[in-house]
Every structure is written in C-alpha cells, then in structure tokens.
Image 1 (cartoon, rainbow, N blue to C red):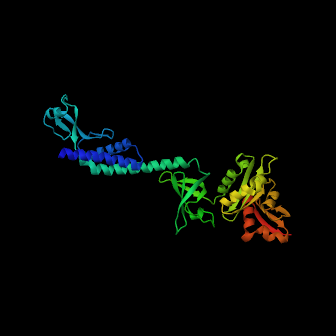
Image 2: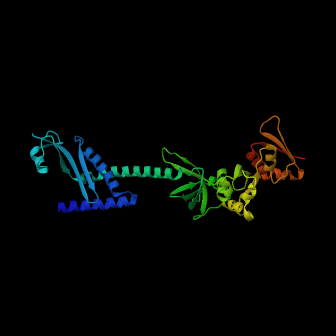
Image 3: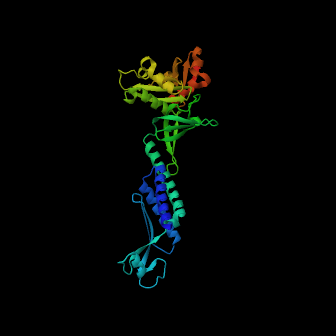
Length: 351
C-alpha cells in the first residue's frame, strides 16, 4: 500500500509540474530545475549539520529522487552525514572508506517547504522575465508612435488601458487629447514617451498630447517628410484645439506645405482625424525672424514686425485694426502658439 501511495504521489507531482509549466509558459525542465533547487534548500534546512545533498527530477522519465550524501566510515557514525561501511555497502556494494554514498530521503518530507521556495523563485523569475521582455520590446520604440487597441476605460478617472504589442499600457486621462472620447475596441496611435523605473518595476509612458506625437503622425502620413525632402522646423500645440507646424523644403522644386496638405487635403485630413479634429496651421519657415514671426501669426495678415532693441527674444507685430482679434485669437491662443513656435515674446498692436 505504501509503495502504491508513493507511486501515486510521484505521478501527481509530475502532473502538477507539467500543468504549472504550461500556465507559466516555461519549459518543464526549467521548472524542474527550480524545484530541485528549492528541495535542496529545504533539505539543507531540515538537516543543518549535513553538507551535501542530491536532487534528481527528470520529467521525461518521471524520476524524483532526493538523497543525503553520507561519508563512509569504518566505525559507528558520529554525525548524521556519516554512514557505517556495512550499511553503506547495502546501497553501494563497492564503496570504500571516505566515499560519498547517496542515502535516500523521502521527497514528500520537503514538499511544503520546497513548494514555498519554488513559488518565490518562479514569481521572481517571471517578474524579471516580464521586465526584460518589456524593456526589449519598447526601448527601441521610445520617441516613436505605435498602434494599440483600447481594452478598458476606468469610469471614475477616465484612464484607459491600451494593448500595445504584447503589453497592456496605461494612457492617463491627461495624456489623452482633450475632448476625445475613447471606447473599448478603438484602435489608436500613441506616442512612446519613455521607459520609467528600469531598476525596479519598469513602466512605459504613452501619450497623445505631446508635440512629437503630431510630428510622428506627419512623418507617417507625408512621404516627403520621412524621406527628408521636407523638414519640420518646429511645432507649437494645444492638444485638442490647435497646432502650428513650421516647415521648410530641402528641394526648391517641392512645395513643403502642399506636400503636407496632400491631394484634396487627404494627408492633413488624415492627421487631423487622428487627433480628434485638432486644427493645424502649416507655416513656411524663414531664417529671417521678422518674416518667420509674420507667418506664424497666420491667419492674420501682419503689416510689419519690429524686433526689440532691449531684448533678444522680443518683438512687436503690427496688424490692421480689423484683424487684431484674429491675430490674438480666442483667449490669446493664436498669439501664444506663435510665440511658442518662434521662441519670441510677441506684442501685437493695431495700425
């Protein structure tokens, strides 16, 4: 009966081993090696005066053996890790004094402790594996865009869980475009901002509000930008409302603004659709700051720009009185974006 019970325990052990390996998506032998280490630690704890143990777990042959290596002595053993030569020869007939002989131990004696050690080891390894997997998947995508599927929206906070690649990432409410309403199942683009907490629990910050998110969308939509024929010189953006993008062409035969607009406005409309209808002003970059500032205040017509003699980064822009409100914009938005785009503090006055 006892032999039958041990056989059942052995069979159950390997059945559970295979099931656990499948759940954790680990090779069975790799899991067996971890449990071997756990049993070794448990045996060492149970027999603190003994120095050497042998644990064999072979999933293919379903072999489970735990042994205490005892040293053969001629006299009566003084310590537990010693064995008299006569008894030793019942285990290993040709052993001699000083040899190490494996003395079988019951594996079930260490099952509980070994299981605890094994679980801790597996949890740690899984965390490390997930950490390495996440870093490997996203470290080459930082400052780029990626497509993902919205899985969940938290009703209270509005934060979204987005599956990007093989991982679920959090898109916080303040990184979503103001005014947009996301739904489960939506496929969206996100900007991979950075990897955080690499030494501990790494996370990936994603966003749809960064200036570079718009830049990557334009690069994706406009071949001339990705090819380097058209260059984006600057972006100023109030996500969900309006953006200004300054451009220049490296080829005099290529109209950089026309390239971004595309046939029948198809390219710019595709980008605007991705960012919830956010308006985009395309500005022709100019190395002359007065010309650049004039263009940045579009759609208003600027009469002239005077650079300040007291400050390097300040100027006064003069516009027709009828276009003053247009130049300033709703809540000063047009003027603010022009200032961000050019890097100048702009004082707007009517003429």
